[in-house]
Figure 1 (cartoon, rainbow, N blue to C red):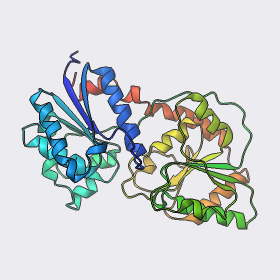
Figure 2 (cartoon, helix red, strand yellow):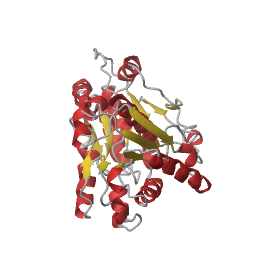
Figure 3 (cartoon, rainbow, N blue to C red):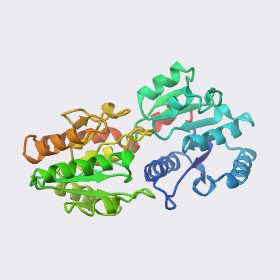
Length: 345
């Protein structure tokens, strides 16, 4: 098989003080996998090139790679910047050489609403989205070269053991109201008024301008723990041993396949999330976790109280998730067969 094609990857690869960790982690994994499979992979880190004043530099870099004979262009960044790059490459007849890896879940709807120009996306080599519903929406719009690949991570195997119930909950994502943080705090206050004993630990970047630490100052059993690096089996085992469930009541408009759900599964934790966007395809209600109504802190409080009271067998759910997470392993999803189906090898 031919793995010598020249490939250019363009995506944000560092955080630079912005809360874009989900995108960055995915891009780093995708780039690593490309370099493992192909012998000639170049990269453009888009993080410093997102400002309008830096666009000429970006276009010059793209043009230089066209001149150097790059065969394929992998574009993986937020919608507006991706459209700029794709539109530029199309001017040089590179449509059929572009593989667009869509970030988040709002792409098809933005085309429907006229926020993105559908003509830019017709005739690309492939558009890869995170959920089959997005793929079906695009096909209805006449964009046919599209396929679905769920979010992915390197799946690590932890050793489950008998664990003591902690009455402790975990939040692990960008800390912003749109990801459900206010919903969690409201539920916590409700449960505290009922006299329940529990803790909630938050890990992640606090969104600029969101006074989260002020909001939790009067809730003694809610803690901000900073950011969390999950790189080893031991890291996930600590989550398994110290928490009972992952809280993620998101209503983020551009939600696609949240990586935090994979982290919850890998830690052997039930996941509590909302009936929002594509979550019903990721979390099996009452089997791998629970789906609750959107922006409904009362429903979240009821479910947390049931967990605290011992209503559910959390160990069985956790063991199920440790098996379920294997389907999201990056090396298994992005294997040689995958790149063969894309026509790259």
